[in-house]
Every structure is written in C-alpha cells, then in structure tokens.
Length: 188
Image 1 (tube, rainbow, N blue to C red):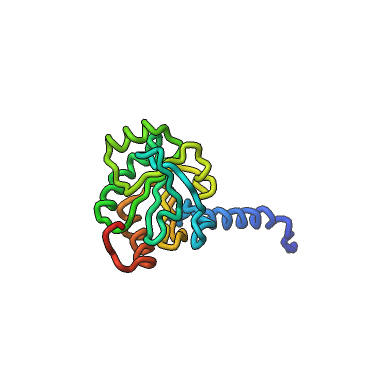
Image 2 (image 1 turned 90 degrees about the vertical axis):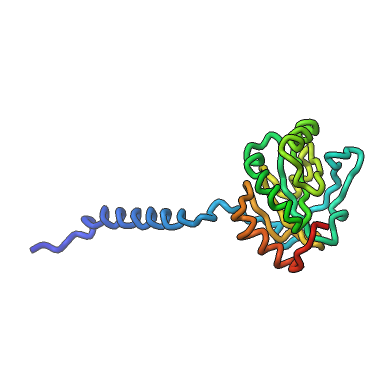
C-alpha cells in the first residue's frame, strides 16, 4: 500500500478555494443595497453655492438662504429619463408639505427645464439652476436624479442616488427627516 501523494490533492484544494470565492461572491451580491454609494458629505456641512433661480434668472440664492428649516435638494434635468419616472413620486411627496423641496436643475437648458416643469408640473418650492455643473462638483453629484436631505443648520443628513420611490421616501427619507425635524409641519 502506497502513501497518498499530497500533489494529487492540489487540484481538489484549488477547486475548493474557487468554490468558496464563488459562494462568497454570490452571498455578497444578495445585498439589495449593494449599489448604494456612501457619501462623504453625510453629517458634514453642505457645500456653499450661489446659483440663479430657474424662474427668475436675475435672482441668485445661496445655501445660507435655506438655513433655518430642513430641505430636500433634488437633482434633476429635462434630459434625464429617470427624472421623469421619479417626478410623480416627488409631486406626491411635495403635496404633503412636510419639507421644502428644492429643485437642483443640473446642466440643462433653461427653456427645456421650464418646458419640462410646465408639462409635468412643478413640485419644487424653488428651483436653482447649475447650468455649468460647477456647484454639482462640490456636492459630489455625478448623475441625476440624486436627492439630499439637508437640516436646518445646513448639514447633509441623507442622500440617495437614483430615482426616489414611494417606498424609499417612507422607509428612508421620512425617518431621516423625523430624526432632524420631529415636528411635521408645512413646508416653510
């Protein structure tokens, strides 16, 4: 009777290691939030901006103008198909008047943006226009739609990349809003 040669089991050991790696990959891909991108801006002051108001291009607003009450900043563009899918969800949420909804029109032609809001409705309390996309860089925006919750002191408390859904609003945005503004009230 001969002793087993360890080299004979090497292919089996390699196969077992690859099977373990595959199983780990499958297990990790089960996470439904695996595409979530953590923002380094969460719990940090929102980047300052000075942007024109879409409906009043001669008027400029700054982040400081929004202090004193939380607000939701929603990044959108008339060129963005996902923004069109998200729009009815935003409209329903805006109708609750739970929080100010600020539109952040990104890299859009003003006339196209105004036409889009005229066609689908304007759920926003105010819309700022970042035509060149410079303010968006400071906010870490790389696509539309994206949504931020900013507290009364100008600190970013929550962010979502991609279209909002009713489930996301009820499951994430509203609890985050309740945590920073427990007194539901009309948008200020």
